[in-house]
Image (cartoon, rainbow, N blue to C red; front, side):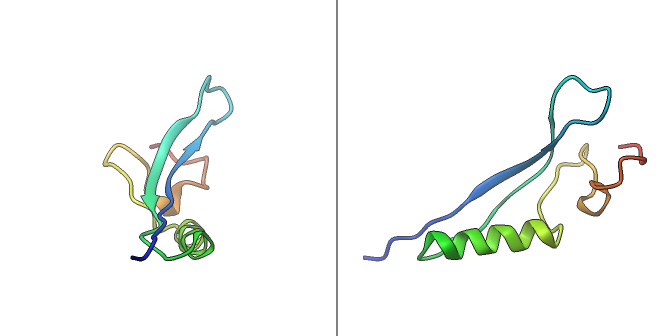
Length: 70
């Protein structure tokens, strides 16, 4: 029997003038046999801006640009 690990994550932000954080994306590392492997996969997805988002959320490539309207 093999043990597998998966990291589920959400990306949230709080802009100037906002009272709370809102989710702008989410994702999963996929399964890996080690926590380090799952962490590496999650980190890669986040760095490459390849997380998932709902239609009302900004596109991943637009998240860092606080001057755009969502």
